[in-house]
Image (cartoon, rainbow, N blue to C red; front, side, top):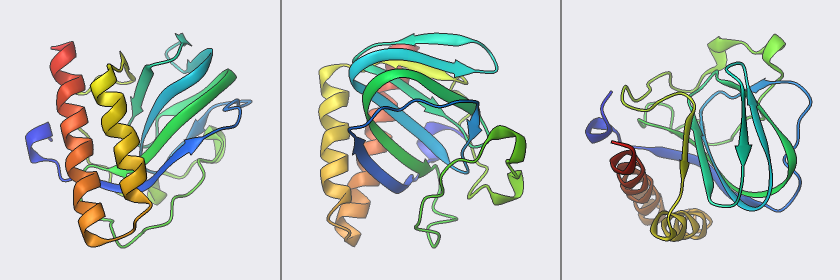
Length: 164
């Protein structure tokens, strides 16, 4: 799927004030976007380890194994690229990789031009957009849902444009 064909559905949008540190890889049932707001650490995946600093942004597709080391405050989004599973509104905590069942994936559709894992430095504009998305998400209305979807698509376009 191309970015132009997406109509994102955001299942969760929050600021995580706590330590995001895990022991062992986990796999999520939907896409994940993480933006490091403060602190530093490492992203651990099957492909390797990556240093993380403030403004570091990561996007993973469903079933991608990851965990974090270090003390970091993060902005977190759980989302699908289509609205096929929008009736499933509750996010599910990613289980350990060894017990992950791919049958639980909300929507397997991914973007063909998004590297896995996608790692970038978020500029001030993208960071502000994502903060606005989190605020709008908490309003829980059809208008806020449309705003969140459009905002995520706009942020993805800006991020993918900066890596092209």
